[in-house]
Image (cartoon, rainbow, N blue to C red; front, side):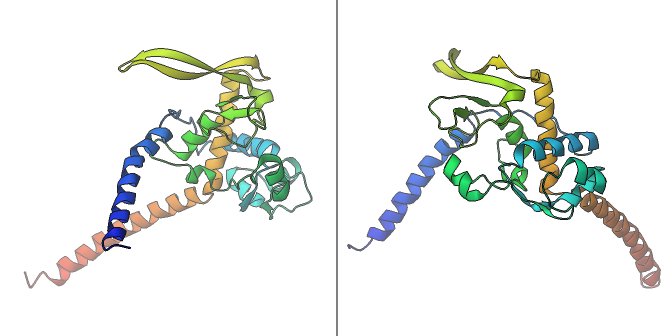
Length: 256
């Protein structure tokens, strides 16, 4: 190999990466994320979201780092958790294990469904929070006969996950429309509801918001305790600063 070839190769790869970076950013920002209307202090919303999670998500996805008894932090008692949210023989203190074997997940969907414990935190990006991503994603499924599951998604193109909430939302189809833009005609992708579900669009959006609210809580169940403790610490340090400053003034009064 001639002298200087490794340096030229490294430079070429760096330039290629820099050239591809804007394209990657454009692709990730192609879909505008809707703002998730969630309130982490709304216990009723969190409880509804937990119910949706165990009924529709826990069949395929797990939450291996979340224990059922942490749901007491959203206002549920142990009997309520055991009677309404546990459908297997596990105990209230056990983690939320997935009902489906990962091997079958790979066989059926091509990939094992991911764990959802911290999904809201992992999906955060420059284009929006993880809650915004999940809220938009769960409302953006559409029929696509070319996909193995018969479903596709605007936010996560060619996703392996089927639309498990379609009976509630209804069936959406993708429509391509032309719209006049600054650079001439632009193609706009739009979802149109072809078949209604058991819920109205407003009701479905509310259900998705509750589910996303719970997923955000599940990513950090101790957040409220941490914030409250942080406020106490800051107040303590403020009082301590005043006392320390007064002591300093008293100690140095004869020197100054």
